[in-house]
Length: 124
Image (cartoon, one colour):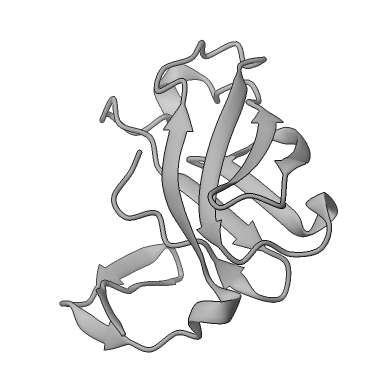
């Protein structure tokens, strides 16, 4: 199990819980080891190299990578036979400045279709 925070949003209002213990199935859960580069342009077009230990779905089409709410395109599995596994994608164009959050840190989310999200270990 791992301690997590849950954020629930209803009608545009969100509330974050205190840490709760979540059980997960290790054989179906990927864990982020690293991502590079750490910085890119707001214009998009940066190739991200993402290294994940553990589970990967069978197809790159089942993996969605987000930087904040912006989807990365062209997800490919570069090396599924190693551990950590190497995937890559290309960043999209960031939203207009006046609609972005004020923090310079972005939220990385990696989802597996129908299976959940990769544990990011606080890596951003």
